[in-house]
Length: 134
Image (cartoon, rainbow, N blue to C red; front, top):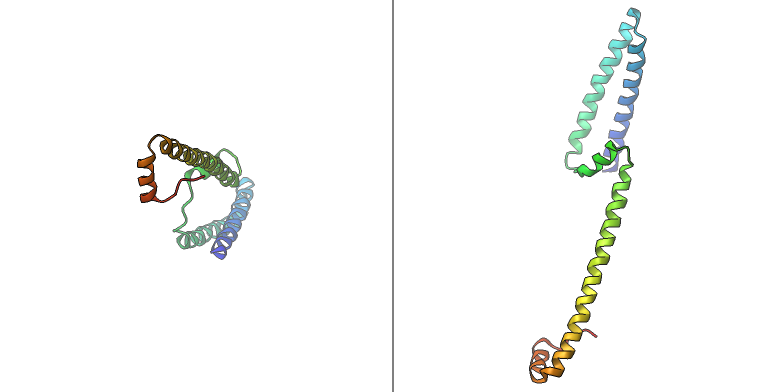
């Protein structure tokens, strides 16, 4: 998979360099540079064709739209991954806290119900086992 990305990156770099050179030729256009302009235009067309071939190899790749928003804002797209992981960790901590609270609540509830309803709780423990967390 990495070689597909490397191949695409190589074609994109060549394409960008061709566009840069094309811009130089166009900005200082002289009739004598028409042949060079035509050659660069043909290179640009073949570069787009190469990029299209690479795109077909990578059609199964899905990129979240937020990544493009990061790029449009001039931010590093790797920050998106970092921030997603940070949000996931924060959410994990919240959920873990809720689980711990519910576990303690269950333990306390079973303990208190055992004091108030000892017969019923012994039947409950017989059915469910001694699964009351400590």
